[in-house]
Image 1: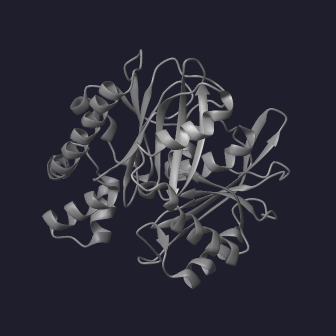
Image 2 (image 1 turned 135 degrees about the vertical axis):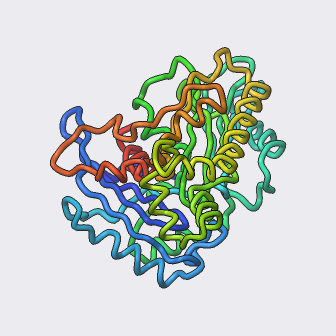
Length: 346
């Protein structure tokens, strides 16, 4: 449920490794960043999609809001992200005889698609268009996860206006607000501990899934193969990446195997989309986002493997540069937080 009387709120991106916050302000038709912050979390504060060390989490959330990156944040209302591996989003078809029966039809049809029993989840849905069949986008998340987030946020004096599925926030950040795409685009969100994938078609997400390869997996691979510490491996990954002209192309050779495996997962998702979703258009291109997308030459590497154009996404698409601007090297890491904050201007 969203409370429409609330005038403004910030976006709060919650992951296993970082907390990130973005607050936006709208002046006329332009939207500006007014504040941002990020804090690294120690391992174990979040596990399996839930806050485990709640006291530590509350302390960090309170500290996060006391940002000196921009204007002081006065509101305590937020739109927060739910853990992607614990959520499920899909477009389903329903047939109904009377409008008043649509809720019952959505519930019954959802049972055939979601990986949980309905009594264990919160279910949200929205019709996309009507006819003999109505396409409905459904989103679900286990009740225990939602209630865990609500409890911790409340203890930190943060009032969640909405708890949102991450893919929806990312799409809002990367695509023009209130516009429809002519061709579907696939989005790869390469994060530290997991990678999300979804297709954005017209103005909705037909499906999303989590992939096995993450940015941390690449760091671990380098550390093991080159006998480095995790910090050393992360440093050279950032500096050299897949640039074949540096270090005799050694890093590219080491990372070829895990990144080729990632490419295969992307190709499988592409074929799944073509087989199970009746789209009139093929996927036009792939957008890369998330902190892991900063890996040098990742886009051309994947483009060659999956036979689709690949490019870095632009999370600032709907924003105007102002006095407060996100650091260039961290923009991709703030994609979700930006999209969450943009919800109020949708």
